[in-house]
Image (cartoon, rainbow, N blue to C red; front, side):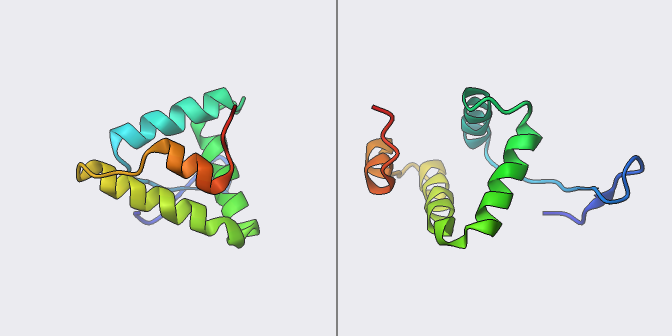
Length: 91
């Protein structure tokens, strides 16, 4: 990530740049819409706050990052395995 940029409208808010694969961005976009967030930024802020406030869940985000790397290298973990491990099966 790059250094934060200051926001002239609100000196308490900084803008950051984040680089992720297009395929993962597509998943992020679908997720924030499905969960009723107003924007991608709102969803990402929520996810970051949740990660900071509940560090015991950080393993989940680490596994997501590892899966993203594996996916981009042509090797991945099926979504069913992730859902089963974390009990997030929507059915």
